[in-house]
Amino acid sequence: MTDSDEKNGKTSQKSKDSEFEQTIELESPVSSEPDQTPNRPTNLRAERHKMRFLIRPYRDSDFERFFELHREMVHSEFDPHGLLNPGEFEERLLRTLERFGFPSDDNMIFVAETPNHEYAGHIWFAQKRQTFNGKPEARIYDVSVRPRFQSMGLGNALLQKAEEFARDLGIPQATLHLFTPNPTARRLFETRGFRIASLKFSKPL
Image 1 (tube, one colour):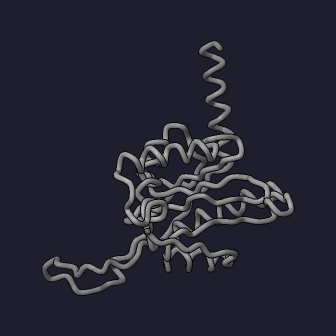
Image 2: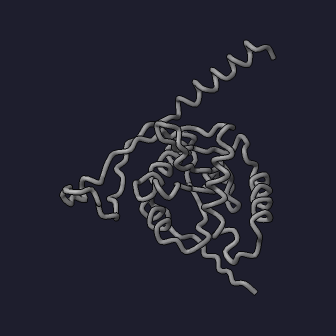
Image 3: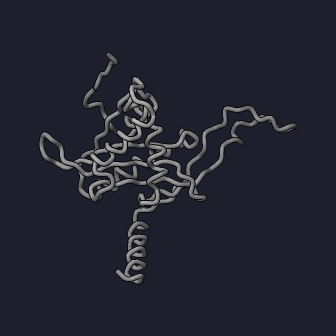
């Protein structure tokens, strides 16, 4: 491949990715910290401000930031009883990504970032087929938002983006697993129309 071919390939990929990019504006949550500024009147509404995010397709250069957040957010789900040390957990998590075919043609990730390219969150899903009837489904593996960007609606925006993308592909159903009791996540999923289809219980022995 010549330098020209490589450049054209990157330009083509960038153009293709831009078709799926979306800029959104969300309102930050009210700060719970009292304002210590002298002579400034107390006004919680003044603590709200708008933040803009770009939701775009994942790039290979995102992997380290993707994995860092993914590891942080799923640790309590995948190792709820703390049976693995950090090194073992990371090694097994990497093997799990490989087993799930990450990244591959049937996997899709949308990343949310701020205007200064701070990694804010992501949603990872894949086009699979249901075991029972063979129909396609969008199987959601991970919806993660950095703590400082939570309670703004960013998780909801990422879910909406994934649902729209899957719907455009003609996929009739989306599924996900919630491994640990998480009222905030459950409320988000139920607001998006997800309903409980199964429950898994676990205990250390």
